Image (cartoon, rainbow over all chains, first blue to last red; front, side, top):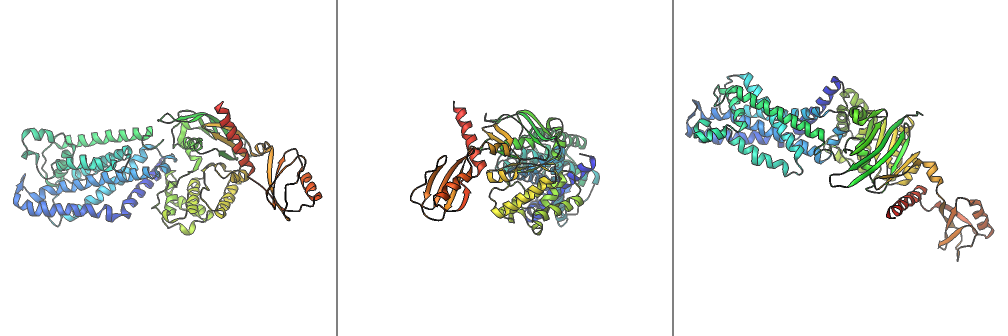
Length: 257
Length: 312
């Protein structure tokens, strides 16, 4: 395929993916916004007012970046895992397999769709958060790059889950038993400095901790961890997951008989 | 007509992970411009062969060439030359009809403007233009089959492969699809067709391959194959009832009911002789038809012979 043809093909998958979640926005966009709004009300407003300051910020201000990131992570992941598995389950994937599309364009197309949904929900949640707090943007460059890269990372993770999944149960196991616990323990609601030394070290193994902290740094200018290390971890994970996805698609795993 | 091969398969084998050997070394060639019937009982290996040609199934060994392109060397270029109409519906039923075609064109790198123009052309040709804005799930079975044909053509392939395209389609739509495919073939597109309607294969195809249990057991022209038919059975509707079948030399006649006579006629006997004899006996024939489709008779014979040979 020429470069122009590849651009058309990538745009086609991207538009298809965006239309897919946009058509069912009541199922894909509204629920996460409502859920995160409830977190704002309950944890930020009601309980947060009893907690006091965290790292020198109001508790509500402290948890907003983590909650936005949580929405981005879960929606980027959910979009790609459900879309790719549905495509595989209903055999639409064959439309792509019989075409000259290179595998990396299939990966990029689905990931772009996941990023689009993650960022759409992220922007909506950010908009809602403005009713509860005055947002400050300490470093917009870090903020935007972190949310974009994190969204790409979890879109890739969702794609891998979709490739491996053999039933609809398989696409809910990872989000329930891995993604949600890692997100809740990833410093969304607390600073790891509050934890005893041992648990601080355990927390450092959780990659989501680095993403939440870097994103929070973009808003508030405070982080429990090194920003440079966080970028290295996020980019490292992206490269590993991308290579793995390409390898699996090329080998035909889960998509060809 | 061109002389090149549109498809060339050599020693193609496929063994699935569970050990089932679906293809046992198939070799066949389809000439450019041909209308080729690939027949076989259920599970014979037809869909596996098609799946390998179109990249949906990974082959175990063997060579496949699409026109001049070896799929092991440049599958991307080979895929541009092939259009596939699969056996099962494999489009997103929640997408509008027109969007399915435009997306498919997009996967081939065709810009949206051209894609919309081609979608219009094929949807009109296949009688689906009025349904372009409807979700695919709202189409009837026949419309869904035609949608898959339109989708397979949107990138203008030189080789169109149809895996049972008329399954479950009523006779009127089936005939309109036959006409469309015949015209498409006349315009230069090579067509490979699998079907269980042998009348369809006999009417449309010039060359025929029969696969059974993963092996190619017949590969010849339709004309030559039909010439192999030694006996044909005709059903004669009589004007007046008969008590018993007349005894006519060289013909085996059997009374089905008092006004229906079945006649087995061998290739070396003239049908005029039978009518002369019936006329001489005062038996008037109102109409005559083949008892079964000729290709069907041959197909059953070939597959039975193959099974018998395998047992010994």
